[in-house]
Image 1 (tube, rainbow, N blue to C red):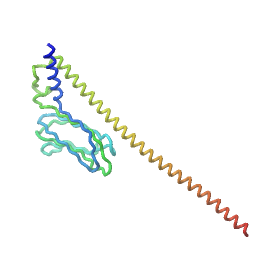
Image 2: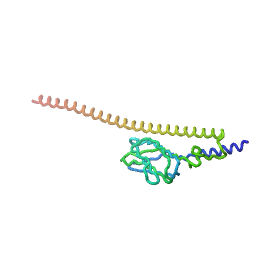
Image 3: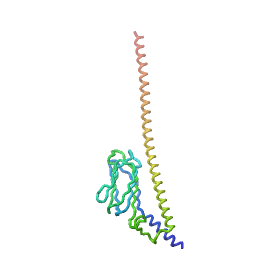
Image 4: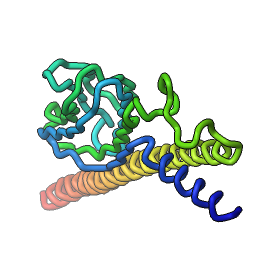
Length: 217
């Protein structure tokens, strides 16, 4: 009794893991550079693209999403975070490009999450779903709920780490600016102090010179 149940669980877990194809990537985009990614998608498949600029400059980047025929599906300039949900209307290779060409000296670190649903013919949520061994049992439903909850936890943890990295980068940048400002203020104080001493010294030197001249007469 236990072996068939375990076999069903393993099959269901494998099915759930392949149900959604997901790619997460963090990469560095240099200044005056453009980086493109490609993914082959079937007609009717739903895909989600999420990106966030973690560090660099004003935390913004340009994005352009193209269909296999070259049609621009989505285009935005100088955006820090966004999430795009589309359904493939064409069968072929979709391309999305990140551009930092507007920046001349700052590079960016960008996080992307690219998710594509499986073949609609085999999706549980699609019309006339085809599931092995008939309707979902209670155990299969529980495993599906656990899988969705784990995905939600992973998403929350990822976004929390991204916010933490962005906040740390901002804090380090602010600390560097404060240090430079403090050094500038210190140098200015030293220059003012030296100038004040030299000015006062010149006053006493002039008086001493004039007194000596009067006594010599």
